[in-house]
Image (cartoon, rainbow, N blue to C red; front, side, top):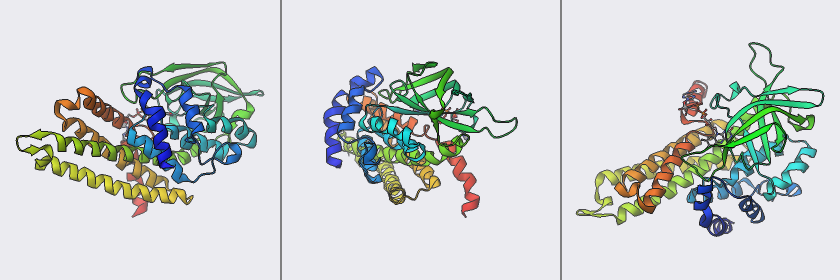
Amino acid sequence: MRLRIAEFLDSEIVPHYRDWESEGRIPREAWTKAGRAGLLCRTAPKAYGGQDAGFLDSVVIAEELGKRRLSGFLTFLQSDIVVPYFLRLANEQQKKAYLPGLCSGLKIGAIAMTEPQSGSEVGRMRTTISQTDAGFVINGQKAHISNGFTADVVLVAGQSLSTGQGQEPELSLLIVDTNTPGITRTPTPKSGMRALDTCELSFEDCRVPTTSLLGTSGKGLFYLFTFLGLERLMLAIYAQASAVAILGELIAFCNNRKTSGGSLLDYQFILTKLADLYSECTVNQAFIDACIAEQARGRHDPRSASLAKLRSTETLKAISLLGVQFRGAQGISGGSGERAAKDLVDSCVQSIWGGASEVLRDAIGKSLVNSI
Ligand SMILES: Cc1cc2nc3c(=O)[nH]c(=O)nc-3n(C[C@H](O)[C@H](O)[C@H](O)COP(=O)(O)OP(=O)(O)OC[C@H]3O[C@@H](n4cnc5c(N)ncnc54)[C@H](O)[C@@H]3O)c2cc1C
């Protein structure tokens, strides 16, 4: 299976990727091709268009994307971040309406939590969901939504308006078709992950039917935090595979770059830095593998997923920085420099989205008292 995924990415995605970076999005055709090649939603049941596959298939796909740093074509955003909400929370009618399209790539899905004023503080979102006799009315703004401009369907989180003064806001989740009147989508220009379609979504008296409610009204925050664990593990797997690949390329560069004293690898400072990062990568891999094994057994520990994301993305960032520094001028110019600079900016996104490193440290720190 790994070979098949690798062949698909190398023949259908990699050759076009530069053009897609200029365009700022991945064409729909790539999604449907990925669907036909079996890259999407493999863990979904066959009855809804999936493959009934185990979690390890998701891991292999994320690793192959990570090795190639295809940060604009993160199919796991659909397969392992958006679709699990449908699998676990949707009713039969909602599953039948959305899952076959999401599994085949005919539909593209997104999840909208972040707002211009509340990213890390998910619970403080201001988008409102008011209930009427005919359904729900959404008002508010979402920011930095991956695949949002292309998406056919977005899971929108907002405050259910019943929330009283001084109470924790009650959030709900709605399944929203993006052709619903009242939605405006504006692409967000970015300096990193350029092929990833990222957009702002504005909702102005956007009316959706009662059947759009996903799960139980008011349980949105619980759902978001529950599913964030798997999201963080997927991001960790992707970051880890990227880190190993970037480190391998950097070691090869250092070996080939000749100086009067031999190669860059003959400088002790460089060698020890590379050895440190190699050991970090190796230890991270062992920890991530343990998280993967637990997830594959259906046991999921959100705290371990946060640790895995924190460690793997911080190591990725450290390796990417040296990927520029140890190349000298070639770290910012020419083909090798362009690659290294992209890796560096992209690595910064990895330690921000899905829970910034500082937020993860804060949460892990606060949990320490109960864990020792
Ligand atoms: C390319 C990209 C794609 C994205 N895709 C999506 C998507 O599909 N759906 C979605 O909902 N969101 C998405 N996001 C948003 C992402 O999840 C948020 O950017 C992230 O949660 C951080 O929120 P923020 O940007 O508002 O930063 P802020 O919350 O303003 O935080 C800024 C910085 O302050 C520090 N900080 C914040 N809180 C704390 C704390 N408690 N303790 C210590 N330090 C803290 C951290 O250093 C943090 O990086 C995406 C973001 C990017 C960049």
